[in-house]
Length: 305
Image (cartoon, rainbow, N blue to C red; front, side, top):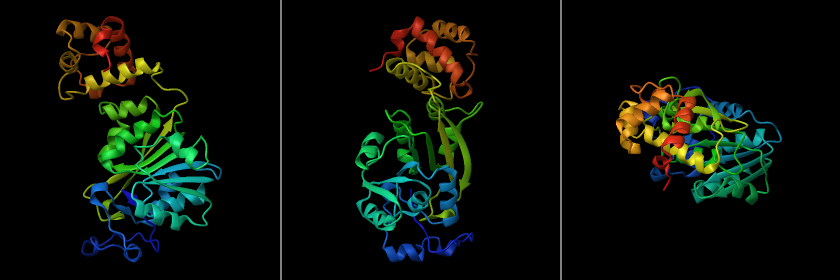
């Protein structure tokens, strides 16, 4: 999804009869959203401002914005930050965002696929440096890989603020009995928090799903502080645990790791984990204990590649 800034501020919900018609200012720009890129432009100015406020920016901060669209949220961010790096895969929209940002402080628009460049490359191209905040209005298909790409980068952000599908937001935040592979991966590096919902009526064209804003504060040190090879095996264990999420944990791990029933039951017992639980019921500390025991007793089961 992308964002656009409207001609006036209004809380009035868009009526069903005009939901498919673009707002006047977008019609003047001649924009046609590309379905293949999941483009839905955020057109509610009050929400654009509220999202920018949620980024908690200081006047000297650097921001990397993913999915700048025609520059609606970009303008709000540029007004609050010291340096804005706006990334947009669509060349036409990137060109429009450049025009929108002219004379609005230090802004650099990069026409690129955010999954094809590193944060360090973006900072270098725009003459900026860490620390920085990552902000994005993300289509579903890049949400998980993009968040992980930034969290695991050599130069990670201090904070991530993303607008995503509401169901994806819930998966990012997780919680007791509701953890997911995504939430645990995020919690390895940061603290996720759901901020507020955004209705589909705030976008043009209206998506079929609701959205929500999530903020992730990066931890000073990863919660699972392991060297890269061991961390890769830790994530392999997480994937094994969630490979069959509807099964009880001992059954899912047995088939994924190739261990006997007795071996898996012994691992879970010694890690103080009830084998009848499902993967969603385990928190990060549970997985950390289970990983340490698995590495000690059955390291071959966690070979990567």
